[in-house]
Length: 279
Image 1: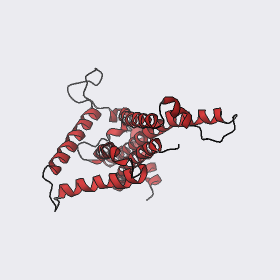
Image 2: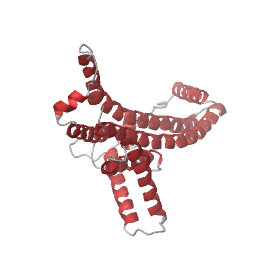
Image 3: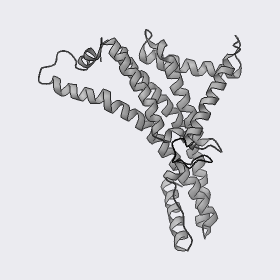
Image 4: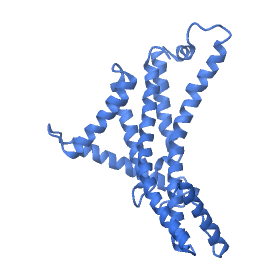
């Protein structure tokens, strides 16, 4: 059965149940992304919310894992050392060296490795039982990570282009007619200072938000149909919704990895653009 049929079955079940009395099915929404941790209500300046707690847990886990795995290095690596070396080599060679270039990439590998592992772990938390929350679905966190890339990129570019004036001049390719230079400068300025950071943050946020909502809809909707459906067809649709949610969980795992990779890849691409001789 196709996803559209499953979705239609779920919607029809919600309507039938609502018409038959009771409160009916309530679709997942913003409340599912903002669950404060006891005893705070999520409104005070020091409230510890679910995204903040999950992010702190991910930082602690990554620090514990990397420090523990690299404390006793050996020629024949252990499983943890093999995983650390694999992730490092992947970011170092596939992203850092190939995108930024062999001359300048090493100084940016720690930043790229931190971005990749932090985003990946927090994305995968979206399908981990009892956590089931992708931290990057809170837009503020991708914005902060984007600002780190943004500041790094422009700082490097300003140093390489001999100051702010030289950097702004480099936005205009040489050899253009005079009437075209102001137009191109405005377009390039918007690209480097507005569009790039905006799309970098929103791409990660949007994919994690959509994926989490999709899983919530099929899981919660399937449960509702299975428990409250008043005929076998609606109950079967609930079972089908659960089966589809399992398949979509594996698909979501792929998306979570790709989004961490794409974010880090674009960060390396922007930094590589900053260290290059020409924009």
